[in-house]
Image (cartoon, rainbow, N blue to C red; front, side):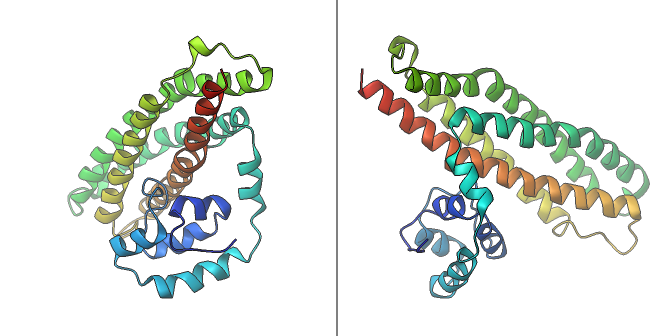
Length: 242
């Protein structure tokens, strides 16, 4: 893949997810902000594109079979993958983090009052993400599966199609809100750095929060930069042929 300044950040990461680490190091948002060009992203993050380009080019020389595999999936398969891999991860880890953050607030809150704000932010994120994923699982993903079925059958019920733009925009807005929320959590925790007086629970909780955010970045990337864009294009293609 040739890295060009007019490619979007999302396109680059879609081709090779290993580039996400480069963008992270340079404070460039590749998931929620993946829709802008590399040139604009560098300007926004005050990063020298002439320095970043060779670094990205070096990374993409390494093969990334996972990205190729995911990009080759039918959209119904990608919906299944996101539910089984990322939705399950969120659901499995929310109770653990809620319990540990409560414990940290009880034990360390007096010396580290920022923990109360971290807990509050995570509780909001947990509730929002749970609702968000249900909307995807019950409404948006079934509709995308119907698009795939319509394409494969070659005889779509066009009266049932149309209007995917609005729900996808809602999902994008909600992704942006949670991305910003975790940016605030990361700032409050000094990028999940356990303080000198922190116990083992403190360390494990911060590491799990960090892992949670990293998983959320990839989760959002798969939806924003791959699933949603392809679903919009597929719906448009189907409707134009009928």
